[in-house]
Image (tube, rainbow, N blue to C red):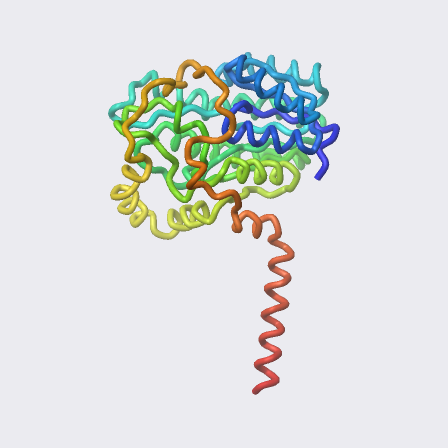
Length: 331
């Protein structure tokens, strides 16, 4: 899937999933616009992608500000050309029980994670809809379906993004528009989120296992940007989570109440240094990976099957027919 000549915008594109996604698009020759808060990290990412041969525009942007998002979108079109793909990935979070989160903390997490997606989607669609082409990819989570303790702002934002996306999708269908909007629902990932997210817990935070490398998410986002799937699920744990919420939410309540506190914390005391990017970005280029490389899966067999759903279904049907034929001959 060649991206040569394609203009891609990635919010939160300097770390974690966004950084890995930028590398994935750069590999195929896309023109990439990076939107993030930290100028030093933007420059480091720009240099890395430039060395890969990509054309890159780095734009310091706080996605919680709709005027700055709109200005960034305009700068992209002036500098790189018409936007073909817009990826909403920027997020911040806070790890704490709901009653321990101050109103301004909750507001900030919501404004970046949810409203940042709203403003990004709006800026993209204002340009794509009149042209009748383009794709918006929402970076979602299994927590868009099933919330967990200690992350109420993030879970609430991901639920809201799912609701927003479904509403916009139906409006695009009503118009008969060729613009596509899709959501990629992700599992726990080994990203720097767990080394700089604000926390009020005593132990180092971690993703809920099984943990996947951010390149798995980047591959899914890249694929979703080029295929007209309504949603893409990544990781068998995401599938189990969504199915569990659909068929036995009460059981998920009990399970998460008993396991998800310890499941989101390591045995190590928290190192508070550089561990708070809620209102201001933390300095330093931390790349795409967090500290859990030794526990993270580099591949997702479930995603492999998702991307080949048609051929797999045909093969399964052929095997079933052959098996029935064998049984009939024997009988």
